[in-house]
Image (tube, rainbow, N blue to C red; front, side):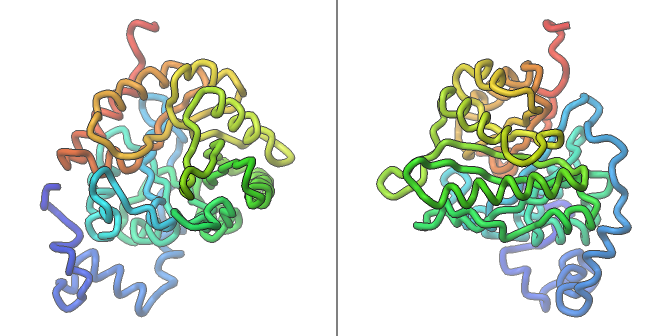
Length: 317
């Protein structure tokens, strides 16, 4: 990561005594200590985007809602997302790149970004259910412990995102599915997008594993599409799997492609996104760790390549 304009100088920069009183970090700390209403005011004054899409006619969203589930790993860095100043620096770089028009996060991260002035003109999705903490016995009981529809509307955000994992062997699944249906309704009542991330899941040696096959994703997508009393405002957030054409043919809902775990084979990831973006219902990318923590730590370079994939393929014109 380049150190130009960094929010914090080191992992120990959260010590306010080491920060200049005019630094962005000092402003955030001061608001949290003395003026918590500053976050809502920043949201009310924020310039909202005039269009959902960027200049390529697609969405390019940076995802940063992993920490609230205790999912801090990025590639071989076990606690990569556990350094908040470093994460904010990476988000600052990513959000400033041309063609990036939005962010997905939980309240703590979104509020930091708001106060730092990094969300001007950006599409914002609030992450809603983060109660299914990674690695716990109750992981599939994914309760809504972050944003709710009322707050998303009050903050003038674009919509809310929910993870919907379906395990035929876990009774907690039905509570999560019902809660997601309720959230779809509450968002739709406010004409806000409900971004559902569906998976068929199962436990392997006590660990929740998502089934990344076309058949599993078709089943998960059709279940997600039927949640709530209307699907008018529902979008899907899905991974790239083999035979993606079949998966995207399962519903008429707009879809965004997620990035998945950060890994070393970045070229393969980019190529899989490029192919998926050719499909008619795919409207863009929602990528987190693969862009924020690339193997070479060149966040700007990784984001620029992802944005370039959104351009219309001349061979299809």
